[in-house]
Image (tube, rainbow, N blue to C red; front, top):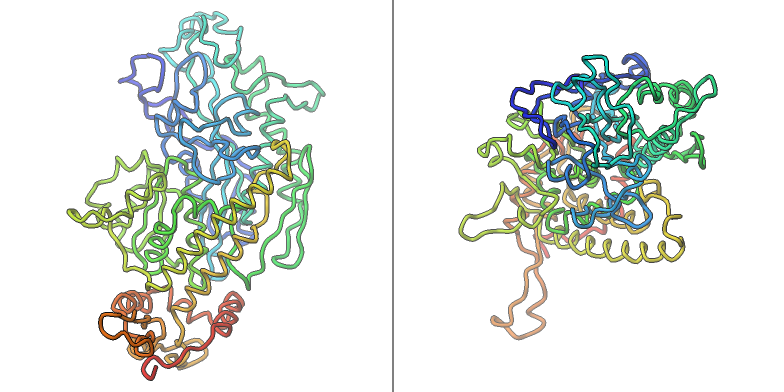
Length: 580
């Protein structure tokens, strides 16, 4: 927080402080955007601190830092160890009753929040977007003495007294002094989809800070980061500890570490204590990269088959999309997985997986957007704005996908995917969850005790997840079967698509007609027939008019579409629907 904000409505009682603090970047390395521009990121990171605290910066007053339950009740995102031995893998969202301390909680000795978000910016090639993955951990530390007029020791500081210099254990509510607690965050950015690796780096940084890393003189700065001792002179400050680490391991990691060659060469980097961290990037000619391991299965668990097909249909037809959750990391994960599952298409419009409260007016944009927000921020959005957006609550997907006969759909609903595609993807979701459960049981047996199990975010994409992604890619590619017969080139870079012809003869327009025993009991007469499906035609009419579709046509000769051509060749040709 830059300052403690306007506190005229604050009575000094313990708990959440009624103030309006402003966020600020305390320290940055590299200090400017030149380093990022030289590495392909053409735009800077606008107001990064807003995205680190999308719910807003909340202050706390008490003898200890706020607990996870208190943070969750206020709408502040809290990470949780939702998988044994994992420290927060993302395999679901834990409720308040299920919350267990995460690895960051145990290392820092206080309730911490691990999250991540994504920026999209133009690269050197204007047709391609460069993503910046921002991974951070947030926690509360005591504010310096004398900054809060309602603080118990404020008068002692003004009069030159020692104030509260004895310190004490975190959570000790015995005769301790009520202090002001402010949130701080450590954020790392990278253009590589390695959220799990960066999470491990942050965890090692926090462990080194909490254990008291030695300074240049060889002395150790001991003491918990979140202790009640607010003196900045008795212990090395949080900023100076991070700065010391930057000058050593972080500097070498950012400036000197090797970069993997996508799909060709992997690399591993050392960082502080522990095993070397393996970094790999998939080839550009394959499926889109994923942010971390286990994210596809976790997304399917959160959304279910109905929620996933709803979001896929909304994204393919370029609707306004808003997803929200009390867990910021879950919002970013779902956004990244859904946009990756659009292959061979790519989301071409405004994409802000984590939208901070300071820029909520983006929701009123006249063009398609895909955004995610913390649930607590929805109360700041006008309901008339939400009525024009496909809204999905990741904490309760059923409430936004069910249909109420009296009121209709509970949110704006996009054209549904063709029945055969929707059913096939739904079955694949069920199979993925089943296979992932079996894989989890096998891993639990192989790694005992469970504390030895690595974070799922550090793992590569599992075989069930890979199989599921390939299945979804085949289904979405099948939507445009027959596009070749309707495509003409004025020049090598100017494709012309005959939309009317495609909407008359595309195989995806036709569904199997179910035979009826009431008409004829003769089995030979009840052979399934192909009929034009109004549902499929409605969806495809929107799809072929979308910017996604025309962007695909413009890059048919690019390396990124190599897998698309392989899939189209592998799909077995069907009979002409007109001739049967």
